[in-house]
Length: 452
Image (cartoon, rainbow, N blue to C red; front, side, top):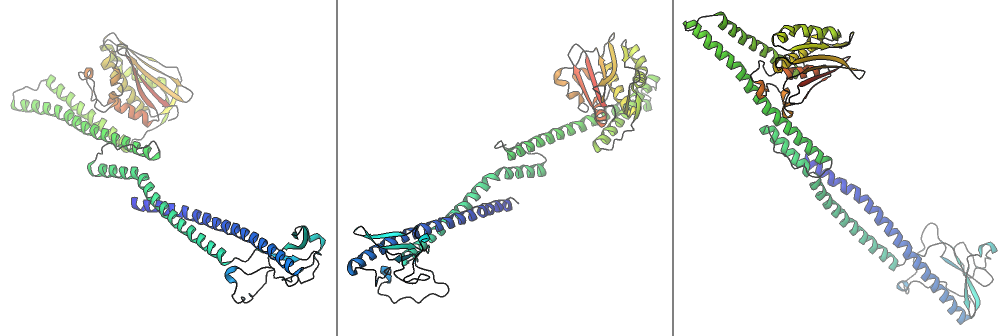
């Protein structure tokens, strides 16, 4: 494909340069021929003037004058046969001092009186300061002699040679430019092949800051993103395997001990087994939801929802948990605030955010869920806690699947809550971000269109 494109570029160079060169060569040849014929006409005029003066000096009149001697190379040769078709008059007609044609020529019989109106461009031929004849120009160019013909032929040959050389040079330059121009594409082709065969590609040299350089930079960005996702996917699979194997191992050990009679099946042990089972069920459900979102199969059941009532339901759900933990949970929302959204999915988002806030808010702390308009077309819901906050370097990473900060490893949860919440927010066409200052709590900001 690259060779084909290179060939096309070379042909394009030749196709553009050849007509221009031929046009230039044709113009140059026409100009040289015109200039040379002008000089030839001037020579003919000077020779005719000298001939007239010599003839008049010898004979005292114009009688018997031969207006123009044949070219030196033609003298002594038999006269050429008259040409067929229209016969052009000679370039100059010789007139006597009374403005009559002295020597007959085509269209100008001898003795013809030239009208006064046509005498403006006559050239006087004088002898001893006395006009002895006049020259009337007919506009007919002088017949090219052998020297003129040879000059035109040599000039045409040289111009043709120059055009051939220039075309060859343009083809070579086209090959050189196309080689340099297509170098980034060859580099990109190598990167794509490496990415296809090995699944990863080394960063490509970005080259010049032009469109092809932008293409290489885009490929490097895409390759880096693919590598990041590959590592993240591998880490995600390892984390999932760990999160599933750990409770299963504990459950198997406990059940085997109960079966052997080593451990009695007390209500406390059965409760821990139920907790591990609930954890795996929740993890399985979260994974299924994320898988549906990744595949684009996540559907929303949109309807108009009273936001104030929805927040009150969330408050009621977590009221006892907050009270038992010594945390004050409050809701602040204007009455009759409505939005079109999926109440089940938005409730799931808020449950994740409030549960996360409860996990990190110490006893005596405060959690506030507030709602309001953001502009005229968006709903903004915030969940603010008075916990220890999140370090800046972890603010974006907490949205990664299964990511848990060092201080969050001791709290319950699968590590998928915030990732699921952001996925559901984006499914509504909204955003979910975190604002946090270490020591001053964290605020989760959910923004969705009023009409999702």
